[in-house]
Length: 234
View 1 (tube, rainbow, N blue to C red):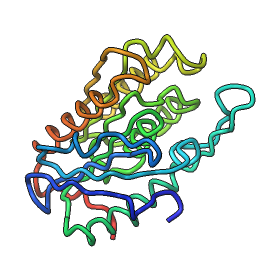
View 2 (cartoon, rainbow, N blue to C red):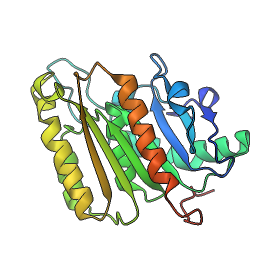
View 3 (cartoon, helix red, strand yellow):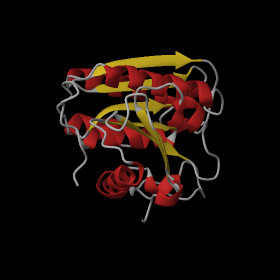
C-alpha cells in the first residue's frame, strides 16, 4: 500500500467482542505512541495505524513548509483516507475476525489534523479525537466553512496543551483560536463536541492526551445504537 504499512498494523480487541466499534489511531512508525497501553480496558477495539511521511501523507492539500528551507507539505491526506477506509480497515476485519459496527479516528499533531479532516470528509467516521492537532494548517478553517457537513449523531473531541499557542513557528501560535473555531463550526453542524485544555506544550504529555482521547471516544461509542450503519465500504 502507498501510505499505510498494513503488516505493522495492530488490533487490540475491545470488551464488546468482534462487533465492537473500532477506533483507528494514527501512529508514527519511527516513534510509536503507547497505543497498546491506551487500549487496555476499552469497550471499543483499537487499531494502531502506522503512517510514514506524515508531512506528505497526513496533510489535506499542499502547503509550503513552516520556515524557509523546510520541505513543503505534500497534501496526500485524501489518498491516505481512501486507503484507510477502502483497503486497510477491510483487511483488518478479515485478518482479525472483527466486524465493527462503527468507526472512529484519533491522532496526535499532524495525525490530529488528519483525523479531524477525515472526520469532516467521510461520514463513515462517526467520531474523532484531534489531540494537539495541527489545526493551524493553512486553509483548514476556511475549507470547513465552505463545506458544511451533517454532524447529527457524531462527536468531535479536541485537546491542546496550554503552552502550545506560545511556541513554535508563528503560524502554529494560532492553534488554539483555530481549534476553537473548528469546534464552533462542528457544533453548528450538529456534532457533540468536547474541548480539553491540559498542561504542557506540544512535546509533552503525549500519553495522557492519547489515553484521554481514546477514553472520550470509547465513552461516546458506547452510547451509540448498535444498529447504526457506519461500516466502511467493502
